[in-house]
Length: 251
Image 1: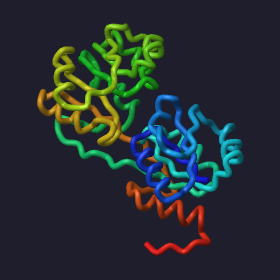
Image 2: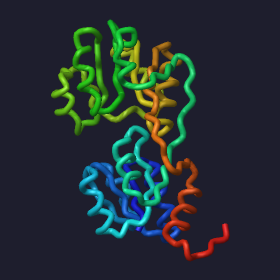
Image 3: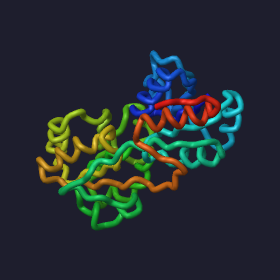
């Protein structure tokens, strides 16, 4: 059995291809919402957070023999834990999107939380819920808004964001909707992650260019993956050769 670490659009595509190749798979995701990605596919889906303590039971219960990690580029904890199992591991990394002015790459969140980036700015944060608490000290030094999923409302309130500073919705799917929102709020700075095309970077970059708004893009964390690819064919080859080494394949 293959363990597919999912929750991304790419992971559904991988699951579809594995199904076509008759490779049995189990996909793990954090939430029941993410589990809907795999509706209609015959593999097993397990929702809920995993940690080092729960992984051995998962591996033993399902007879896991290899791992394909197609998690979000910023979901580093699960990637580190999966690599530490010692099982054959392949990282499927979505391709990054090239940046151009007015976008600016920022190495990490600690670098972003410096005065020259945020002081007296009107900032829209599109970083997800996990890091919002880091911006509490900036509530009196900048005008901050955060776009979050509806399910993260309570967490955002606990992070000291006022209700009128929360944009409770998924990211727009086209640049005009972004421009309309940014103009309505009077934004001069947008902060996002280097999540690639599926993460909405192209849309935000187009909107930033149209309005002349500064777009700060947090760079991806760097991990030393034992194997890495962005090609679907490599995933199939890895699974075949790892799970069925006795078979001879002619590509």
